[in-house]
Image (cartoon, rainbow, N blue to C red):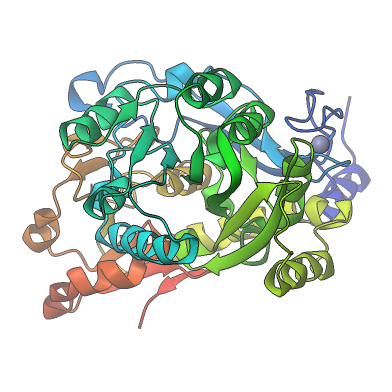
Length: 434
Ligand SMILES: [Zn+2]
């Protein structure tokens, strides 16, 4: 069957309008409300698991790729990935993200502890529980103040680092089952989770567990990257397999309400390119909803986050962005520039794999985390070296993959300017930085 010029034109028109690919290939139920998922938000093709860096000894082994396609629920507007692999596989012992390797994240956590201790009047009679407590990067600051803590962390190797530091930690996934066991001993005055809500496959089980483990009058704080920023600033590279849900304030509010909780306050944070810190309590708690919470709901509404059209139009912008990135890198290479990466974050792998950028563009990348060094990035097999490699190889351009901390990295690597080197990062378009 031939395809006439008219058909090609029709396809081009459909692509430009973001229509092509806007119907989901399967009809999984929404993770929150159960409605069938029929609409594509962003289709990033086939991609390896973003945090599965490859040891050099396995460089010639076969590597699994999975579809990376974010869908949107037309009933509750939860942007989400379909199930593709068990979380036990994703978060196994090889999972090497140690929060304590980021100095800016440690400072963010220290300030949070200071602020919450004062706001909630926490002391030696209080109980703080953190979900996904990692290596104890945050709870250590409560311990310093003599405030009792409990960490819940499913990744054994990071949890053991916390336990060795004297931070009580249960090596478990969070949900109703773990919450019931915890609540038999203690309930939380402050129950917190940073960058975990978006990563849980069963968001209902997770939030139902928070209801169980929260003391009467207790407060929940949760931080997650804000969907509004992902949409407005083209942060599609923050989509990766370990990140199941992409959350707006309105949609998280619906999830909390379905489980006998409600949101009463919110703070907007610069972390991860724009995050929310939401404040929740039991639904019968007398706290009043703040002006900040009311204002953010209005702003999300004005940005179209309660309209399907907004989500369906996003895919075309992602494809246009890919063309810009590839063309920027081709121009650099044609001008004879050498490019090294900096960082090996999940978002870097989404970007490099979706754009087809491998060692033909980027000679190597660097990461301060020794657990990532001497590995290859998944899919692209770009080698991860220690940061000293930048000084040794003197690249013309350093491509900063974790664009959310680009200022911190440019300061650390300021010596690159000694040989006329430049930095490049997305902000939101990929460009050389001044
Ligand atoms: Zn839904």
